[in-house]
Image 1 (tube, rainbow, N blue to C red):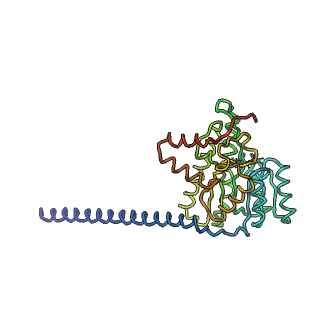
Image 2: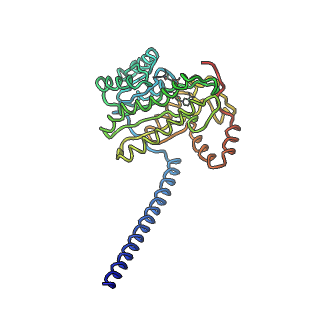
Image 3: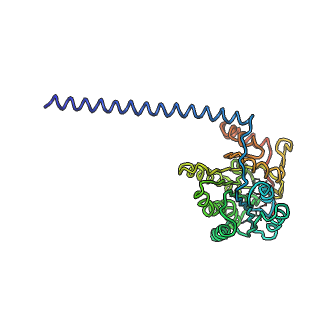
Length: 322
Ligand SMILES: NC(=O)c1ccc[n+]([C@@H]2O[C@H](COP(=O)([O-])OP(=O)(O)OC[C@H]3O[C@@H](n4cnc5c(N)ncnc54)[C@H](O)[C@@H]3O)[C@@H](O)[C@H]2O)c1
């Protein structure tokens, strides 16, 4: 009886040991695979610094852009129209938005559709979604571009302005995703672009709420990308854009210490870069390109090093009245 019990205990110990060995081997195999894949991805990205990624066609796409009445959004609408089936222009400003659509339609014969909508309001966005589904079709490229940037010290911001910044710069992203992502999921095809900012990776004076809102865009985009990937939507793509300073009038008093290094870029060239990033399915891109990488590198050092380098570059915005 006793020897039976002893042999059953020792066989349990052997089974446990075998399980442990199996578990250790599987973790070892996973780590090895992780390392091989990491090296592959690093080599792949170095390779693509020399040989550019192929650009996908957008010929069959229905592209919706918010904030098309002015600036980057307007330029995006004009340039997307050159290569996609239909462009949907959305802005809170009816007149300037209608002008953008008219310009496109003169050149491209009925390609653009103008909708007036305050994208910070969920009910307005839901209504917009219904209209677009019935009148144009399923949106396959969504560019969340509309944004505002009041520049003043934190104390000078009132509650209403802080809430408005978050309503337009952050909550509108949720309402647009909530309305247009399901259609893309049904097709298992689509692309969402998020306009963040270098102020979404770097805190800047006179932009406390704006920086908070653009950091939020970075977080929400990274999380939705992870969720869609995990849910198996292989053909849904996402691009997060981090412009530094674009000459649209949004930065009313830009401070630029080294204009040849960090110039005020044109909205036309910004739109061209964004569209190229979409066509290459790039996950993220700063404008100018190396800024995001420089930021990542400096963040590896003690905080003071990164901050001193930021001060040396001397960028940012001065406060101004609205
Ligand atoms: N210009 C820059 O230097 C810069 C830098 C980094 C990031 N960005 C980001 O790029 C995006 C576009 O910037 P821009 O310089 O072209 O701005 P812009 O001011 O030139 O144009 C913004 C457009 O959005 C529209 N809009 C504002 N609120 C809206 C709302 N509630 N609903 C619908 N439309 C609304 C405006 O009417 C306007 O036509 C913004 O998200 C901005 O934060 C700009």
